[in-house]
Length: 85
Image 1 (cartoon, helix red, strand yellow):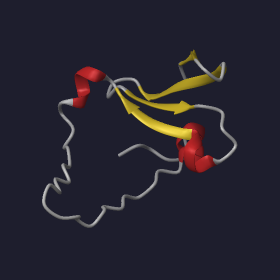
Image 2: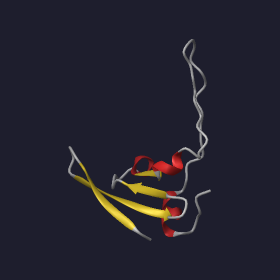
Image 3: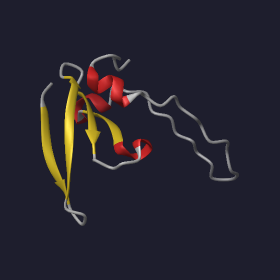
Image 4: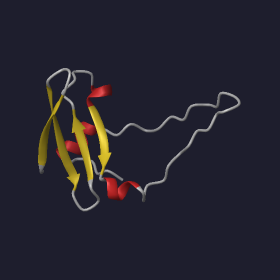
């Protein structure tokens, strides 16, 4: 699986980017944090981002209910056991 490294400034922490689907330009950013809730981020290439549906929770006049989404199992995705849909 192709990967690249980048340095996150301020903390001088190294992060890894794992390309899990090169054709669809989907990658997982592993920032190395111990807490898995904040360790991984799903990323998509800039030229593919326009093809994704966007949810706008516009609440100018009153607070709207927050939306909850299923969390991907990043460990399984990185091991190739689960596919990004």
